[in-house]
Image (tube, rainbow, N blue to C red; front, side, top):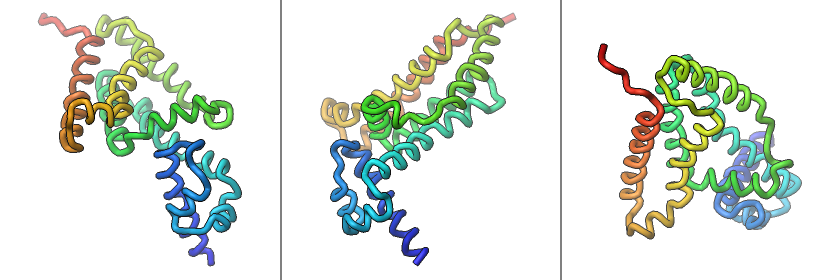
Amino acid sequence: MTCITQSSEKRIKEAARAIFLKKGYAGTTARDIAEAANMNIALTNYYFRSKEKLFIEIFRDLFNYYCQNTLRIFEKPVGIREKLIELIEEDFRVMKAEPNLVLFLMNEIQRDSEQLLPELSKFKELLHGTLTTQIKEEVQNGRMRDISADHLIPLIMGSLQFIFVGKKMNMKLHNTCEEEFNHFAECHKNLIISMITEYLFVPETAS
């Protein structure tokens, strides 16, 4: 019975994750989730009580999935240049795997930030602690332009995320297939790395 319960809960969560990412909270019904999980609505409600309760659980799982590797990179004992490049590569990996993720998170946080947004103290601590300290050290040593982490992170993430948020528009505009879009996205990522690093870091002069 326990195995059946765990299996059923997993099926419901996997189905709900896909439907919520596609339709958002407002556009999803309990029937949508039940049909996607190939289960009846009564059984779906038995496991998760309500669409809202299930949504909050799925949302926080997705939010943590999006943030966890960013936090890990913030904490790594590497130089700021290497750290920023790894942040771009990681965000690209996540966006390629889940093109709808950022738009979903932003839309739902905009809809109900008080209910949905989890505690961000760890993120703030690393952003305004570790990352800010590294930036200040590089600026003071004349190796980096003066910029705050609060400006730098949106500058990096926004440049990359836009092409995935607008994926369908980009594919329609340029009449491209999935493979061609993936090639375009890879080139765009490399351009962002070049632009960010060449702008931020002062070239070393020959002695």
